[in-house]
Length: 205
Image (tube, rainbow, N blue to C red; front, side, top):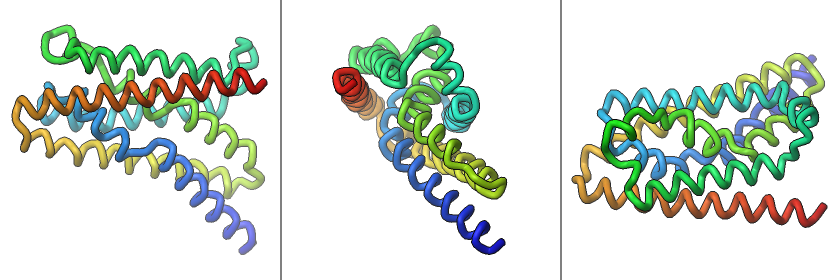
């Protein structure tokens, strides 16, 4: 019984650390700040928790049904990764050109769904990693351990994003604009890397 408990704890820690590294809250923070710069403090906090919740729902859904859905639709993980890269590239271009800043249309967009919740947080890497952990489950204790790990990671993400919004109260409008441009550049780099990785995976097959 003790062996199972230790194994479950180890399994949970491994899952937590792996997902935390892949989801990368510090890396997502500047992009989040660039996207919520024109929102009120209350909206920023709500968007932080909504983004984490969306990511949690997407990862949970794909961990349970992802392989079945992808096989049924004859879609590979690489294709999913390329699609996510293209979507992020589109959003990054909006940030770089300033089309996302200000205006009623921009404020009507729920960025917690796209691109924050998915594919930035709940991207192909996090989805695949969770699917692999699900396949490795051998005991009910490990199942609960994985659930706890996934939930804990998203709580950390929500708190990190929410805490980062205090920066926006310090910098002025010029700083907000600069932050948006930097976020767009970082997001473009992430998008291109996702596309490159997808192309490499396609050519390696």
